Amino acid sequence: MPYGVLIVTGGMSHQENYAAGFQQDPRCKVIAVTDEASVDERRARLNQALADQLKVPHVRDLREALALPGVDLASICTEHHRQGRVAIQCAEAGKHLYIDKPMAGNLEEARKLAAIVRAKKLRTQMFTQVLLPYAQRVRRILRRGQVGELRAIHCDLHFAKGFSDSPPLARRKETASPDMFLVPDAKREMFNIAVYSLAMIRWATGGRPFRTVYATTANYFFNENRQRDFEDFGALTLTLDGGVTATISSGRVGWRSHPGGGHIRTRIVGARGSAFVDGGAAHGEICADGQSYWRVPAKNPADPMAFWSSSDQRKTGGPEWFNAAVAPSDQSAFIDTLEQNRDAEVTVADALVVLEALFGAYRSAARGEVVRLA
Amino acid sequence: MRYLEWLDKTVGDRVSSGVIGAPVFLRADLQLAADHGLLGPLAGAAVESAVRWLNASVHSIYALGGAAAGNVTVMAEFSGGQSALLSAEMIWDGDASAQLLIIGQKGSLRIDDFPELPQLKGSPAAGKRWHDAILRSIEAGKPVVMARE
Image 1 (cartoon, rainbow over the protein chains, first blue to last red):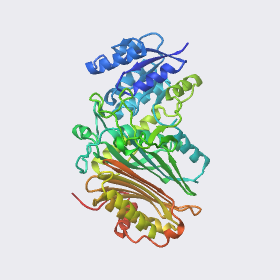
Image 2 (image 1 turned 60 degrees about the horizontal axis):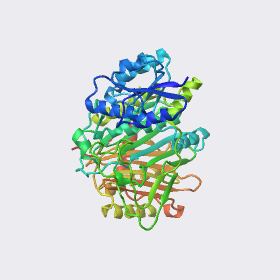
Image 3 (image 1 turned 180 degrees about the vertical axis):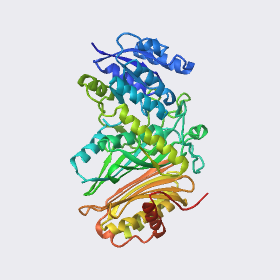
Image 4 (image 1 turned 90 degrees about the vertical axis):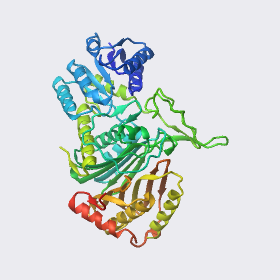
């Protein structure tokens, strides 16, 4: 019997990719697209659109969908402010969870979810970049002891999308406890992007605990983010157990900041050497007559920041840049854990630690202080 | 250190030309010290260059590591909200490197350079004020505010 997958939230979310990943895995059968019954008409339309694309029913009430026969797991990708409560509902119904990053919009729900998952012995996985070749290489370097004992790890992760408006520069006043993270034209980008680096650092260092965080956030690029009071960039400095220092820069930095998807860089400093892993090093490149410099997609009013796969993402320039080998499917990796009855690389328990660091970073940025983590 | 002077001018000239728009973020990993005692001064010199490249005054400095740790990490925040993450590291097996990434509002500038050791003779000439602040931050375990709004 294939694993029955319930798709929670549809188009204009990363579910576009996750649902396709599950549908392409022959071990899975997508049962339906669903969501909370109270979602607005825009969200309901987008949910219906993905259901049509997947050729599965759209069940408007999550409670009804969770009661459908044959549902083994839920792939959850709602807006973050409601993702915790939705995931709790799915976990209470005994479904394994594949969940978008970060796992929730507040720590209370995240902790409750982690407790339910533990009590019900559910399998969980948060989407991250740890299966990408660059992350695998970082972990191999650390495991081999290639640089000696780890002293510091520095990560840059920038998404080269969106039309930079060059807003006036000023120090940002951050909110200590943000509660909204995603609207159609803006995201809190430290929340959405630093999560990858935090998860990768935790995973690559074997779950080494974060001890402190100091952070700053900024509005460097987009009027959409300024108008929503969402940061488009964040920089973090952390300490980890054993005196390890970690730094992260994270943000959406505009189409023209990189010929490909953006900078993905990790520097590892050890007691006997250092290593640099460039996530963009594996790529194809074309230089030729007739290339006109920097053609970017037209601004899509429904997705002006090019968040989602269904929007036009074509960018070309000189040189033309294209990604190298496709990474293994994160969704299939989760199905592997179900089949093999083992933990995923990044579980909800790991995701909770990462979320604690993220919320610590917001407190730090709001207060200008180093924040101690649990 | 002749190399740092070259780097400071080369990057400064390009950034000030406006080619990447207003610079807002700097990542600099400088593996240019063969002596632990030079890590702090090197980090101080990096802050000095950051001030010029980002065209802003320093608001605060938060530093970790130190000579004994074999690396110094600095997070600097600037008057216009610009930020910098700077790392000074030891040279291993004679291989020095300088890796810079500057993000501007309209583009980015990246340098990956591997200078020869003769270019790295001597101590960094600039940045003593920032080196002092780095030492204070490491000792206190918290950021040092250089300028109040």
